[in-house]
Image 1 (tube, rainbow, N blue to C red):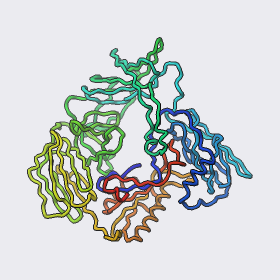
Image 2: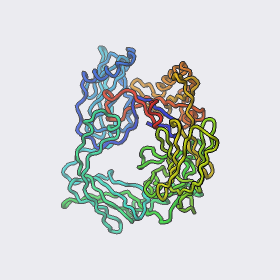
Image 3: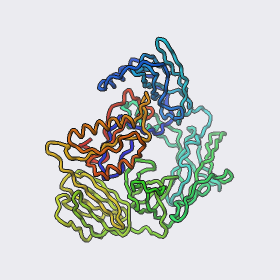
Image 4: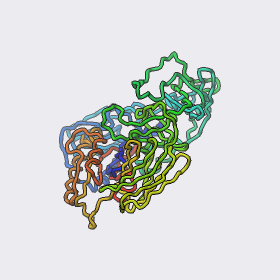
Length: 583
């Protein structure tokens, strides 16, 4: 589920299911299929609060909507298929397992997956007067047959792989999968040998199962002893990966294939008289001891249509945690392929997209100096201006009546805090030097936090603290501006009959608009037609309209491997603590 990225706009995301499809480990033994009676009970319970499904009588025609033929299913032992048969009076089986057909001809099946990387399904449908059969094949991602007694080495498991830029004094962890009881080592072109040692650990449970499956029995996993780990430090490996970051005055450098004649590292698995070898596709270049400063800008195409925010994550490809406005500068401390690591402070690092950073030659990694702070009351907000000698990374956190601004790589010289004209929103501002490179400014509010927005204005950091709207004591929405966002298109899920999520969201959004207007609210709807509109323009439009609240509507698909007959319903997602009472 993608949330609104602007920290200054409250966002709620009602939805049916979440749609991420993370990779799964090798599958276990297939589970038993859900029987027809069980499926009927589950699906009846699912529909008990919904309108009756209108009956359809038509020509028998088998159609599979999900997974499409070109999809890669990521599941351990069982997963779902969905589609329609064109008529509600048909009987359906998939690989011999009975599947309920709904009155409109739709079907949703939860079945065991065939033990193969290319899964074949025989789908058979029958009515009183007709029958049809479809042979349907789908690829299964990450599936491997159970290893035999022979020595093996999984070349796809080698990590890291690709292009790496790393500090000379920092360990880089290496890992690989191979037969239990083997001796594993990485042999470098100069003959240096890096040993890898066995590491026992529980088999990883897919994030989709942890997040969306209520069946806690699936959280039990076996111990794996086929993983080996080692460390590399102070060594370049393989051909050069090229420049760490392109200069702002040079054209981007595109990765080119490396010829096979170039010397690569080789991983070896040895057991007794048997040896298995594989090239380790790893290119490591040691970072220069001189610090490299990067300036962030998410406008990677130069089109000017962005939100001006570079997202920071605690791990490569992880959850959003920092939101850096365009122009923020930080020291680069490493890179793994397309993920760039920034050193925010001695004990704090963030990963960003390397494409959103450009090297700034000639700058040194000296701390910024924070000067005296000034507050300016405005009709709809209070503006705090924080002067800095240069733009540094920062993070804003909130509690019920407190905002905390943490400035990384900074030293405090806050001689004055000017409150300006008397204002009832901000009671007090304090600052502290948390350690030798972090300054914290804390704002104590007289009322609950309603929203904020941070941006750079030349060398000053501007933090706008939004005033809460004056709500009717009786709970009326009269006069309040609410943004309703029917999520998608483009993209989105598709139901068994071919109904697209964008269509369903739009219908719900228009009905919600009517209901809100009945309560006296003013409604800004991000789209009224079934036309492609990306996430950022929708959020930007709501913010520019001055919406008090954003509600984004979705009907999302479950991840592969999560049973929709037992995991279903509605949910409300929120980004900020202030949204809990609304959610």
